Image 1 (cartoon, one colour):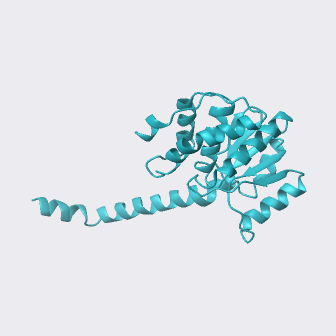
Image 2 (tube, rainbow, N blue to C red; image 1 turned 120 degrees about the horizontal axis):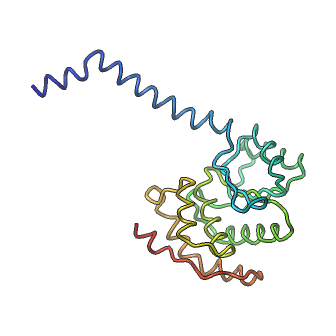
Length: 216
């Protein structure tokens, strides 16, 4: 009886509906990957009203509008420079044409890398905001490198609760089960980042603890 039911399940017209369902999944994935970023800026968010913004890679057709509407003065990108990358060429050209500074502090895709990139980016953004200049921080996905940067900035400089900041990381699609490296990296480098910010004249808040998040 069970064999009969299984055969019946995979027979026509059930196979047709299974095929339609699979096609729909593929179409939705393609729309999310290739169409949605052309309509909406990828994982765009406001961290500090009228001051600090975050995102993933914004499609070049949307970038001028996003920069203009939010009056961005500086773009901080956390991606590695690859001169042949079409997007990077467009981004440089658009930034230059609009008088927007573009600075790069490269990190690896999972948000780890040379901690000096985090420190440099944090100092730069801190100084820009103190000059009342608006800054957009982005990486490629807007979840790992940007998430790591915002964890440092929001806990150490803005003195926000680490649980709230971590919840925000999850909101922007950071997945601790997929990326096992970022949280231990942030925990390990926190003292160095805090010391560097203090040397820069920043009044740093209490070091946050990520131990409980690492254990989840």
